[in-house]
Length: 597
Image (cartoon, rainbow, N blue to C red):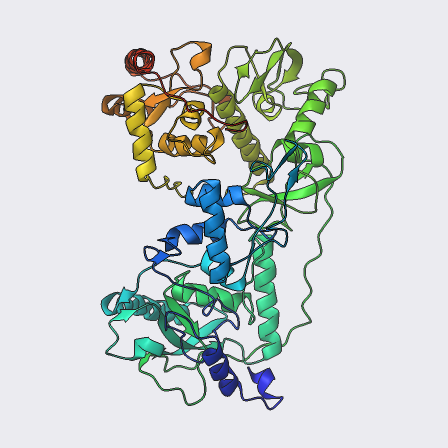
């Protein structure tokens, strides 16, 4: 703001004019102040009532329809999947959206479309015409449906902001401190009980009195964040430390909005720091980003091959003592790692090449052929597929001298007959062991990672209808649902597979495992007793290989687990037979479909 005022511009007047020009439709445009970080989405957020009618549908459906619009546009079949209409009614809806100003119709909308695949005119299966979103359509596509907060909840949020401001001012390593917080906007009006946003004017002051030294400190913090693997994002116009301070005040709240205070700003004072926490800066040399030191070789295979530094996300990368060559990087890559450079990480080509070359040209003459560890055994190894398991399709074993970790990196297992889930767990255990050994050799501590549990999808009346049809027919597949009379044109088997996956996430259905090969894709509902047995089994023991800190092993199950598993398998087999018998007694009706139905 100070740089703008040097040119003689009235910043307050300019902001007031912009606030009036781009007023929000919900009436909560906020004060005519600049966002605290200099950038923000305060005026870009749009809040709507998702249950209100719009274009003959709920606003939620129209928003979801517009969400499917890509930079290239929105196709008819994309729209059908969003609003669950046939093609003719969907075209009417798209025309209505064009009239309402949300979409722009294609130029060749009314011209005959010759399909060279089907040799017909106006083919509905190869209609590549697209409707593009207008600015109003893009705004509605990103609209939120959250409800206003009460004054009581707003006061509780402000109390948390004030407490965070006190903690920031008491922190010895903070680059910014909070001088004052004032209530502005509708929150400053006592008669406002329903608040969509809580607007606060926060006066942030730098820790150092020299702007040059303050910028150097900001750059050090930002480089350290990049070194820890924080993904690139738009942080703050004032610097990384300023952004971290804003984040410490409000987190990622969509309700609280922070602004810079203007001269002569009125509003109730919520917090004021009586101390002056700005300190004199000590002059220092010009800051330069630390240069990347070269690495000598690969930390896993031990070869003197070109390698890049690798570190766990959250730890320093530029000074990491762990380096991997391009092959070992592809073998040991997970989302929890970061690496320097732009090497291509693709595991399957490396696995395929090493499976063919290591038997004749091992990396080491003694020990493991890949990593050189001494606890290696030469024996046949079978390719392990995460879907079909090991030993299928007549694939021959590979004779290699490997340790307990490297087989999983090469997607190999020690015997045929392992199921796909076992191969997946084996590969995960080997990756865990590889990373643990690399950290142990380099003397690097593991960064604790808190993984959030994946939220199960929301169940809709359509999911309940699927469960009811499963109860009626016993066992169904995605193909059965796509061929049924109630299935619409856009609801092909892939569409139904996604809905069945939602039910799998809630453990409400399970595959039919005790039928013939033709019954492989069938699913049935699970019983309460069956789900309870599954929970007890998972609590007692999870079968499959694990990393025990020294090697990859498969622990033996505890006493009583095998009997409980047999009980669960017998119950599942009985339920499978009942479902298949019900399917035979109550066959699934099929509707006459077109070429692509």
